[in-house]
Length: 113
Image 1 (cartoon, rainbow, N blue to C red):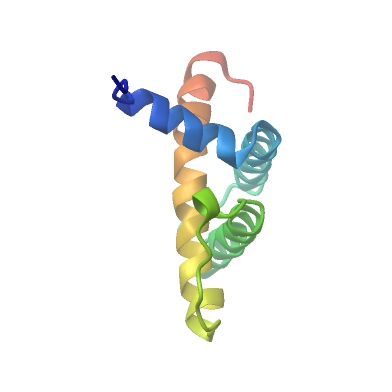
Image 2: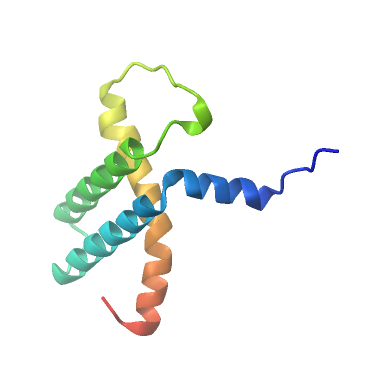
């Protein structure tokens, strides 16, 4: 009888697929972007939006180009400007938020940034 795969096992497989070194690099890049934004004392301005857009573009580029093919599937798509200027920064924002929440919670208690 085939054992049913647990949901958590599938999630852990996805984490392992991204690679531990990529997780460490993403954490360090997120810490860097948060640290620089705190040192620059960014307030709500056009420079803040440009800074976080560029940061999310860099994180999205890193995340998208360092993920191996998803479980052997090949995706065929036509690269467009929407990929470069919209989809990749959205992936970067999701990546930054994913890593920034635990970092900012730890920073709140331990004040390491």
